[in-house]
Image 1: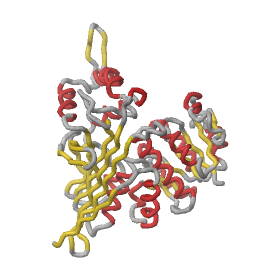
Image 2 (image 1 turned 180 degrees about the horizontal axis):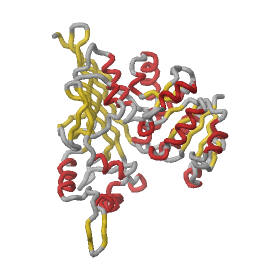
Image 3 (image 1 turned 135 degrees about the vertical axis):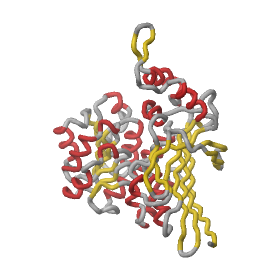
Image 4 (image 1 turned 120 degrees about the vertical axis):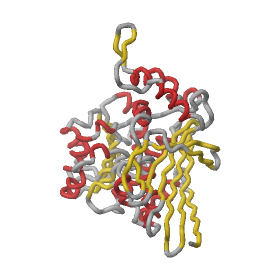
Length: 380
């Protein structure tokens, strides 16, 4: 039986560990006893209570691993990622972009096969827009629409998050990189607003956010962008907050004390925006990827739609399911020799491989994560 090491036992790390335990001998490494206790009933999974930046402990844990999955917070991942690649170990993570500089050269030198940013978004988002680009002679339009939302309207904000609230807030401040007329450019966050009718969900709004990451450079096209989807009215609310200075990072004085508005806003909204399954909150993940361009004298539009729901049986957030399973099924592909080229690969680098596509789509569908593909062919 092949061996897998999972770094991090949070919501997604636990999901990956449980899935890989079906056909791998799994070890999980996490510094927190409470996190590892979530797997207390799984005697088949080895637990190591050590931080991943403990180089000696990581070297010992990874020495026999056929695959390592990095499920650490992105700001903590850099050192362990580098060490794993230096060891020549195969590696898959739903993050990694922030620490990608020099990693490709390192992986090629050591013989490591690594795939970074392989979750849902980034991950399947990048992969599918690149796949669509590979299916046309030239990509005229490639757009990712994606969002994690409550499964029903939840006034006044109609939004809940399962991940780091600070990261969510940052999305509303940073300009969004996208490709226009074949050149990398920027748009203000929350701009480019449009309405999307999504089958099985309803009407949503979509707006530019800075989510393309490596795809902004690697996917060649006239227009390539990512837009975040939310329930209608959300952008107006956030823009009012921005106008009021709620996201400012310059200190202001209140009762003689300096406070940073961004930090205050984050703490005020934490109880309002945190998804609480124990109180009946449920989430949806919605994604649409559209790729258009000429092909053999005709004009084609490839579209992939996906709606995923909270897993009631496992009490697992949809965003954790879709992120975790995208990582684990790719980890299987690497460990089993489907992806063999050494290097530090972005998801879009795998898009031209038909065998991987034909493996990936059914593999995710086994978990109920179904990307419905439609093809429109028009005469020019």
